[in-house]
Image (tube, rainbow, N blue to C red; front, side, top):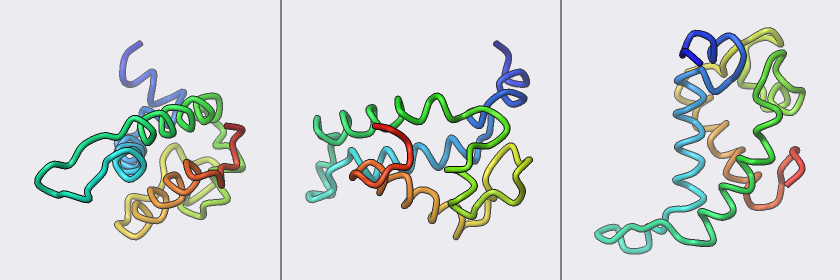
Length: 107
């Protein structure tokens, strides 16, 4: 599938959404307790993978109510979240929180 086709069918076609997902993965899976030796933890990676798997069925259009509830999608017809820095951070934080058991998607 070409990138334009993905963009027309899924939030995964949005570079903004990919940045948010990457940030959420980093927050959930990377241990920064020793900044010189940051590493991905097995438990964090598993948690992120489980969450992303649960979210996979909710990445199409129209945007699912769970996404709209984050208040970072400008309209219900949006094909990507807002790219304002504070919105990127808010959505990244929300998704990372979902990985800790607060997910609106079945995990």
